[in-house]
Length: 271
Length: 260
Image 1 (spheres, rainbow over the protein chains, first blue to last red):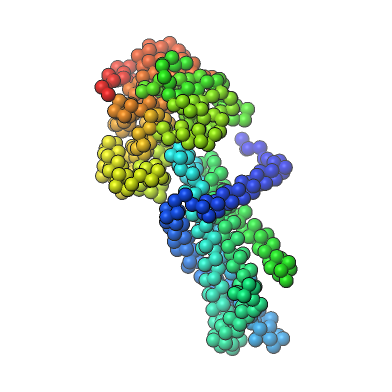
Image 2: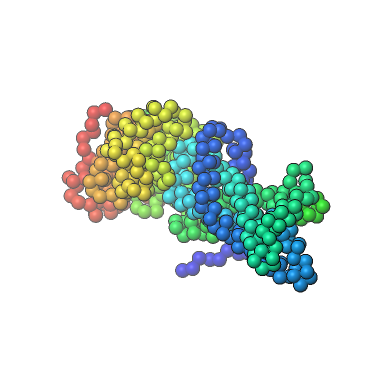
């Protein structure tokens, strides 16, 4: 017998409840990060998670980042050649990578790899009663499991975005050299110059700030969604599968929505 | 309802519903300190739900739950924390943290309480030796058999020397030899450590070996409460249905209680 389908209203209510719980979990996890009960132990868990997450994502992020830069250079270069403006190519590739593509690509990869793994891990722990066991030992699952994963994802997202930006620009430089006759040093210098202005708060350019802020927000968001989905899993292996899917889908959709909002804030509100 | 003096667990009028289905309907139960109380009943009658309500993992819809003098049904975190300090729980699937070794699993409650590492090592070694697993401390749960995982789960549950241990189907899925080993551990927790045990089981042989009292759960309440000998002679239909599938009674008769 098939299960009765929930009404649209019930689905919306469930979605809002999930969003609220995820937001509260994120706030709680960050509060534990800011005021850890045992700082050394908390730091150890964070470093362990950061190591796992960086190792899991480094190769795939590098490859995707490089090809993203190469595609950007090829597409934009062909369009610019029609107007004899190939010289603009480095700044277009660098700005696109730093503002949008770097954080976006990193977030999507993290959602599909690390986020999915976290949802599956915590979901399995939930359905096999490991989370219950922690609670019965008076161990709060938030500082023990959630905080290190979310904070590590925030840090990993920023570090990996910088890596994607760099390999993307290098990939773009190689394509620009092969197809448009722009030397690699010339491309890299022009990219660096393009990302130097306009400065915000006297340190980094607005392009870099907006990209890094996006990366941090995306990382924390992907971590929060993955942990929340995992902790809410129920119904055995099927429930774990549902948790992974909902975590990845919500992460991808919200990455686009929140990415738009941050772009609007940086380039319209703070223009 | 049990009539023992100084009950360590006291449930009064506990009710629990899941949607339209009533699982517990005014359950009264008192477990005397220092005894093993086995809750038996057909599948779906709320045995595990009762255990989860006792441990505060589920809140009852009505009624009161008192663990070692602490009322926990109101949802107070402090009360729950206080009650859980005195409580160990052996899960049906062991519920070991899968990315920690057996040793780290047993050490976890001690480590979270800030016990010095030297003391933790000695205590964990002793507990693992007690369950006959002194040499598997470095193995991970995925490298252990079901029986070994349960024994590690037992070692973790009693590592803080709780006054109450809750066992959820401790022998389900185990071979007869491992079942006897686990039964001995349950009896040993009572006799050597003075821990009261509440055991949820539908393994009659195991229940008769470990129990001081057996409560049969039916219709959301304890329908009848018996000693193991009374259980074997009972004409109650649920008890008869349990005994119908069992080997000769003498094979499942409880052993003499060992001296503390």
